[in-house]
Image (cartoon, rainbow, N blue to C red; front, side, top):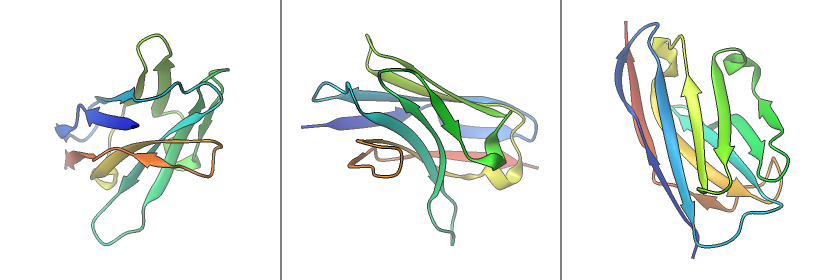
Length: 118
């Protein structure tokens, strides 16, 4: 079965950086997309970025363009989200997910908390 395990969350000050990791296992991911999402208390889940497993093409929501970078290593079945210039509004639980296109995600990790202090 597919398993996604996030790590790397924590507490950081405004302007700081964090790198989230997602370890994927359970199947081959060729042809799939990996995405990062977040959900803040009282808010809906928000898509942040996606990467094509095969081509490495990346996609971002406007609010994180230029600050966050998604990357993957196919050989290691790993995906990362490098987050720079963090703001208090980036505080949320961050999830990685895998799906067959950029808008449909079938498998989800358990989430990792990111807290940005002002």
